[in-house]
Every structure is written in C-alpha cells, then in structure tokens.
Length: 286
Image 1 (tube, rainbow, N blue to C red):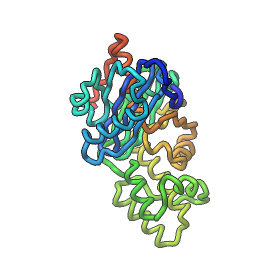
Image 2: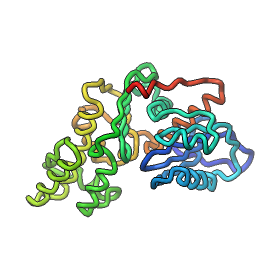
Image 3: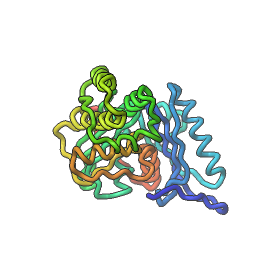
Image 4: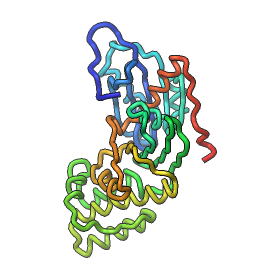
C-alpha cells in the first residue's frame, strides 16, 4: 500500500470503500485491488456522524467521479454500526481490527501499534500477523490529540506549523507529569508563569503525551521492535521523537497514518468480497 494513485481516465477500475467514524473525525477512503489509496477524506465529525459521512462521500466522489466500480464497503470506528446501516456496509469491524489490518498490509512484520486519535488511544500487539493483545483508553483525555490541540492554543502556537519544530529546539523539556488533564494543565501554567521558554513547554507536552500513553494504555504489556505510530497525532514529529527517546526504539509513521482505520475497513471489505471472512478480536472482553 503506497501513496495516493491517480485514477485512470479510461476504463473503470474495481475499488473498495472504507469509512471510519469517530467522535472527533470521520475518514473516508477508496482503494484499488492492489490496496493503493485512490482518494481520501479527513474531516471533523462535529457530533453529526451521518452528515460527516455524507460530506466525506461527496469529497471522495468528486475525486474519483465515475471512474471506479465500488465492489464492497466496510465501516469501523465508534459510529461503525450507525454508518454501516446508512451506507449498506458489507462488513463492520472494530477499530482494533481495522488498524491492525492496515498496518499488516504495509509491513507484515509489524508487531506493535501505537494509535492516538483526537479523543481516544489504542495499543495493539501483533504476532505472526494476528492480534494477540490490545488495550483502549477512552477515559483520560490527557493523552490524546484534543488535549495537545487545546494546550497549543493556550500557548498561542499553531499545532500544525509550529509545535513540532519548536519542541525539537528544546534543551530542557519541562515535566508536565502523566496525570489527568487538570493537573497537567496546572503544571504547564506554573512553568509558564515561571518564565520557561515556549520550546521547553511544548517539548514537555510532547513527553507528557508519551508518558501518559505508555503508562495508562500500554502499561506492562509487550512493546516490540517494529512499532507503527498511527492516528491523527502521528503527524506531530515532536511526539514521534519523544516516543523514540522514551522507548529507545525506532518509530515508523506509515503513509496515510491519519486514515489507517478507514484503509483497514476498505481492505476488510475487499477480503470479504474475495471470500475471506476475518474474525475480529472480542473487543467486549476488554
């Protein structure tokens, strides 16, 4: 699975559609039979998942127009059942399965997935291309993208254009702890009032995301040596660098890391079309 591919102008090609609806973002992706991304849409859910799906479908539709035959549709995310009913999905799978399938199709040897989204985070352990353990955190907001965004805004820093570069300039990152949002915010304010440079503040935030995730989501679970970092926060190179520093291991940010859930759903729809039934791990047991 590589970067986005141009859809041929002649002869319709077979394609599969994946939709990942979360509380913060909604992602829509189409892939071809070789699992190349043909078109993608990343947009905010804004509390209206069906409207977000409609917008995403239109954006992707405008890109691929009438050049593809959609042979299967898969949905995932917290809104997977609602969305699945709306679009008539062929398969509906949980986020763990979708994220794992996307990663395995990029690198069959991946053994660990760190996934941090806008309002939740996930850990997946794989062995021989199968999920052997996982964990999800939907309680503490302190280790998610929305927390990082909120704190960056309070520091008057553009999280997309400034945060990463600024944090990597830090010589002495502050300690914001790994506790709940209120305490971490309080620590940050105290450091700011003490005159700590912005680069040390944002670097401290990056480390706090990492420590919060590793201690509250991963805990004492196994962390392998082929680690994929997926989800919206993976674009933040300061968080990637903090993960590498703390774990002492190389972190891979795969292509289309922010829509891997939707890619996984599309791949699962393809496998279903080809006669392969994939059984998701029992999420409800966690």
